[in-house]
Length: 53
Image 1 (spheres, rainbow, N blue to C red):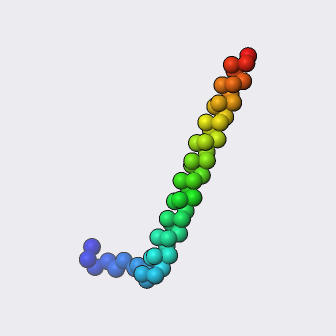
Image 2: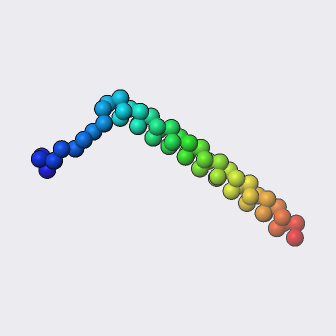
Image 3: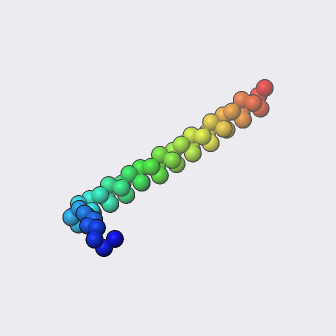
């Protein structure tokens, strides 16, 4: 294993990659939260409709 060279991008590029991954992770978290909220609203609406039947 010591004979294998593992190429790594320069440190500034690594930092840009990490920043982009962090931003995308935050976006995914926000979207997941929005989906959860919308699902809860849909459930409430369905419950209200079913209660009226």
